[in-house]
Amino acid sequence: MVEYKIQTQTITLNDNQSYTSYGIVALSGEKVVTTVDDVSTDKIAVEKLVDKFNTYKLVLCHLEQAIENYLYNLEVD
Image (cartoon, rainbow, N blue to C red):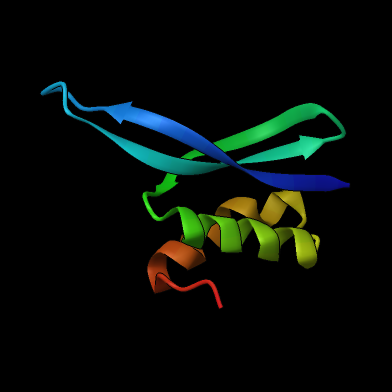
């Protein structure tokens, strides 16, 4: 079974400005299976997305499509 967690990242741009972004890590046990970086700068939205993925037991092969759907619609609920 896959478990999803939020990942905090600091992204530095070419002009040396930086921002905090949140990604998603997929774990199988303690092993990192995959990561999706820089999903959003909205921590609460990514937390809700991760909760939803875990609640509905999102299958790993659907992770990218589920994130694309979120980004297209910009809503979690």
